[in-house]
Picture 1 (cartoon, rainbow, N blue to C red):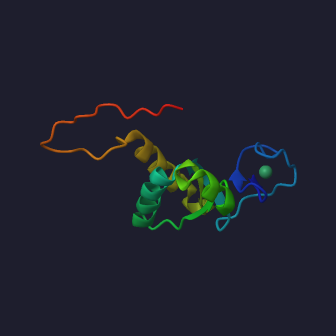
Picture 2: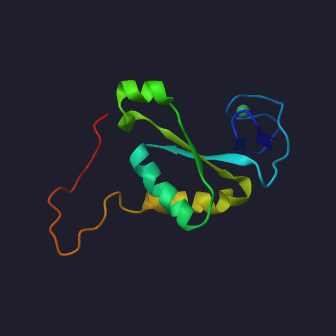
Picture 3: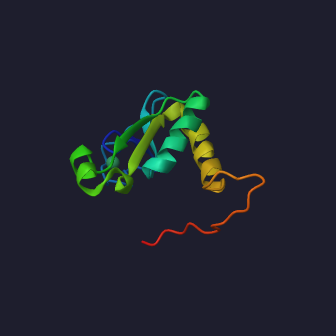
Length: 119
Ligand SMILES: [Zn+2]
């Protein structure tokens, strides 16, 4: 089923995100929530999706005003794709998440092994 509110596809009778029961069957042209990520990963994701000819829509989770206040790197970008492209887009997301976060530097010693986030 599909929730127009949250733009999510799910199994069952009510939306797992907002609990709404006003849901309907999904149509191929519906826009579906793909993932939420930081702007850096989001940029890569957008590139990969576009390379695969998947139309991608994004929105800032914070909204422009809040992003200005806390800085864009703290923002989260929500990505949406047409439902007919969702399975392919999901696979691309998984591949991206599995891939190393940093580009491999061939012939150079990796000076900093870990880029762990301290949050
Ligand atoms: Zn919902």
